[in-house]
Image 1 (tube, rainbow, N blue to C red):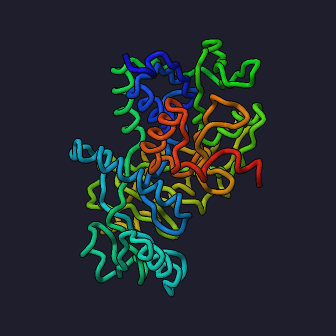
Image 2 (cartoon, rainbow, N blue to C red; image 1 turned 120 degrees about the vertical axis):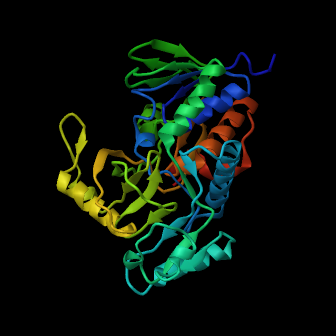
Image 3 (cartoon, helix red, strand yellow; image 1 turned 30 degrees about the horizontal axis):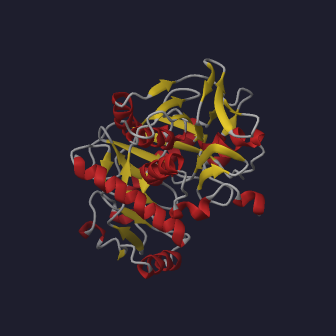
Amino acid sequence: MPENQNRHVVVLGGGVIGVSTAVHLLRAGADVTLVTEGELASGASGRSLSWLNSAGTRSSEYHALRMAGIDRYRTLFAQDPSREWLRFGGGVYWDKGDDGGATLGRHEYERAHAYDSHLVAPATVADFTPGLNREALAETAVFNPGEGWVSLPHLIEHLMGEFTRRGGVLKSNVGAARVEVDDAGRASAVVTPAFGTLAADAVVVACGAQTPDVVGPLGVRIDNGSPVSMLVVTEPLEHSVKAVLNTPRAAIRPNPGSTIAIDHDWYEEHIVRDASGAYSIPEPVVDELLEEASRLLEGTPRLKADSWKLGLKPIPGDGEPVFGELEKVPGCYAAFTHSGATLALIAGELIAGEILSGARHPMLATFRPERFDQS
């Protein structure tokens, strides 16, 4: 019998990091209960552009973790390259302005730490990736061939198949849950409106933008910089786009079913929240985003929205991930990051390893929750 067979871990959060952590715990022999406030993937994982990358400027530790995350997706892709929900078609980026200075600086920074980066122009972009409208491209853009994308709802469905086979227990639509501690101050249970108290040897809080609110009552401060964002998915259309595009007015990627997924941030000021906490946006703003995306595609096809979802995009206050055990609450682990897609598989692996071994992984050393108390 595996030594972790009798360890019971409750994972709080039905997004991709919670599901990944739960599966990695099960692989190591733990008993796992996965608890979700609503349905699986009903939060940020259901409305993420989910661009797999380590482009641009970031700390060396964050870059290393993201590259390890991409490596795990490469392994998953190699197991079955036919999956339409995980693809490596590269990424195209250009910044605001016409002189290309910021874009060139990004390219030089990437090349300095061996991130595969190529300068492209409207006349040469088709040599690197298909389906783009050359007239819409900036004079200077960057193409990163090693990047990709994943549809997180599809990935969660895939992981949940293994979760079920390995005997994991799912409790969904439980409502807002909280972590309970014992007399020694150690996490001992998750208390839910729907199922009462679920005892645990360890608890993982992977609740996206709500993570700081869940650990706050435990006396743990995690700064929250999560903005409201939107993901639009189009109706099916014929296109040959392979890459993820990040441009000044629209970010797009291919999506399963011959659709396109689109997001950005310029429309944040148009998003409103009603008394019940639900977010909405005027439909003409959605149409404007679709027009911006259409300009990027070869033939400028008319894009029609099949759906759009709004909600908080998880971003810690300093932009860096938050991973690891809470010093103030032993046995309680937090997982909160902007790069949930890129880090999902590696984060679940490393957090599960820390829980079951009791040893801190060196790659998470700079991402501990306590840094906010020390700031």
